Image (cartoon, rainbow, N blue to C red; front, side, top):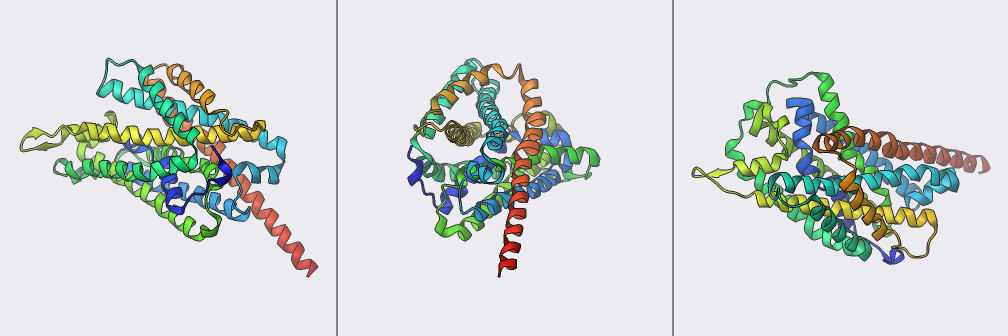
Length: 373
């Protein structure tokens, strides 16, 4: 895994951003968000998208202000090496938890819907093995693969949403908001942390972007993030108009949509498409988080082997995925309550603090230059 020669195009970086922010969230988010915010879930998502756009703007500002170096490098420049190590330790724990939760989600989906007799460790171990092999192959190889997989994920999602059109009842969008402002803000909190706030982890990959096309890169990243937000909002609206108040009590809204699609009175049975979409999204996201975790640990420990922690981290995540969650209720609590809080108040807060420090340092430097001239 030779990171020094890893230069990615703006299109590949856009695919990575979609994989980091959306990934498997298109399957998981609509249903619990409707449960939290009711018919106003899509409004909560729009607000959360605005928050994520702010975080993305800050990450791009940091990338531009520091000449395209990585998060660890400019964090070290701003606060020093020892504080950087202390600050990055919670990020390591975040990546470990996120990777474990992703593969646990794959296991729970197939065990509860398609393959109930298959042991969970089969899904977790195979998923992380494939993700580890891809992460060890390098960011360039992963980006080339994801450029092909991201459109497949979008196409399969759109197929389900379009074919399910006959079961939509648009009157179910009213009243709005049906649960009050407090629940709308609850939905905003969840969506801001997962998935839109997860863009705070994207600086780990920005250092691999080509430095001669930054303006095109930034524009395409915003377009990719907008595409993610629009897809999430559309999927949530479709969930509401398809199932109404019951949507918040169902699991895996896209799967439920696919299972209810009928043509001439017969079920089409295209649930396998949703299974493929969740595998693709989860695989891409787990791969990128493993890569970021390995990169972070390599930099913090100064080892010469740039892929030293890929396999140990994947093994640890496999064990965590089998032991971290006591059951589906505990999984729901940790993913939709603890994880958004962690993302917002650790990951996003770090980006905001570094942005303020960079702006202050830049302002002081400019004033000194003006005084000298």
